[in-house]
Amino acid sequence: MRKNFIALGVSLLTLTFAVGCSAILGSPTAKPEPTITPKVAVAVTTATPAPKTSSTSSTASSASSQKSSASSASTASSASSLPVAKPIKMNSPEYGAQAFLWWRPETADRDLGMMRDAGLTWVKQQFAWRDIEGAGKGKFSWDHADQAVNYANRFKIDMLARVDNAPDWAAPGCNVESKKQMGPAKNTQDWLDFLTAFVTRYKGKIRAYEIWNEPNLAREWCGRPPNPTEYAALLKASYAKIKSIDPNVIIISAGMTPTSASTDYAMPDVTFITKMYDAMKNNSTGYFDALGLHAPGYKAPPEMSPDDVIKDPVLSNKEPVTGRVYAFRHVEDLRKIMVARGDSAKQVVITEFGWTRDQIHKEYSWFAVEEQTQAKYVVGAYQWAKQNWSPWIGAMFVIYMANPDWTEQNEEYWWSITKPDGVPVGAYVRLKALAK
Image (cartoon, rainbow, N blue to C red; front, side, top):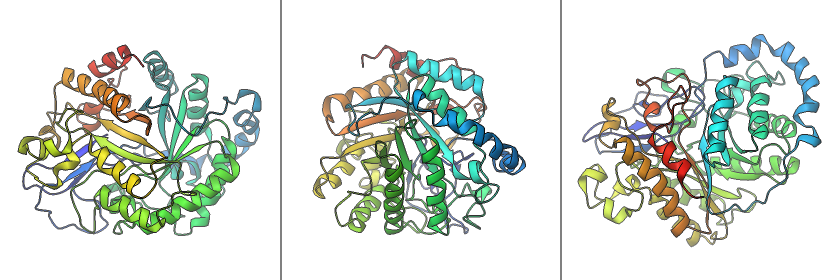
């Protein structure tokens, strides 16, 4: 998970997951953004960084891919190859990581093998709508998606599919590559039609869906101010459509960026989730099966409470109140909202968490830790959750199995538990040894 935080007096930073998007410096917005003076943190979110050829390749290969989709549909939906359906309620916790299975079959095979060897039973993969139906409505390119799903199934690793990022034809003007900006479809029916095709194709082969990513950032919402009511409506429509096709899947709400900023460009996760429950009238039935959260640890150890983090200016970025977001256990602040709204029976899924070793990028270096500290904290986070958050904690996804195209100049490189060439770092080694 990338964490974006700006050191003293610096402007807002955001880390988000979007197709081909790395964390970026500057605020998420379609318009020039005024400098934010207070220190703010924006949690990281990674998407499946993808070569910029995805939409173009969809266009170029739409005819052939439609032909291949017909011949491979039976393979994609073959009953004989379907995993056994699993319950909505997860073990507490279950272990996972985000990986990049989209472009490189050889590294997908390698990384899934490493995950299996480490006892990780979940993989998170982004499926960007624009990479599948970017050429135009009904013009699908399934090859890479088939590859990702079938690889995970082959290794018997459950898949969390993060679906988002509308193509230009469905969300005109929303995608601004220079700002890492995306947005939802102008016509929700186009989105639902995409989900229909996607879920039908992979029915029984994907265990969970995460609906969108970090909608508490304008950058993820077509440059518009974050809107919990609009997102709740999208979530409800998505839930109904997906469940009508595959009732056994788990629907997870979008993980939110932990940010202390409250502007037209970013909304604190506590505020967004509170307003989302308002929009749901305190009843999440028909909206999600588990609440998705992001939980970067920043510089603090995983067992440290937000109350203690805000007492330490080094750990809280000198934010004595809003600095609670710099604690891994900020998850507990968000869980309290669920309990207060009568939703304690549902679980939480941490769709991104981790610590960075980044000493290169100044916007991250203030909360960087040493490699062995990162290893200790990642394992400690799982241990804390198992000992203190059971039974309400579900799957937890550490970031990342590194994208093979990353270098040390990519801030995401430093969050990863492996190197791009597959060499494990300390966090992978410790995680593999952890009794699960």
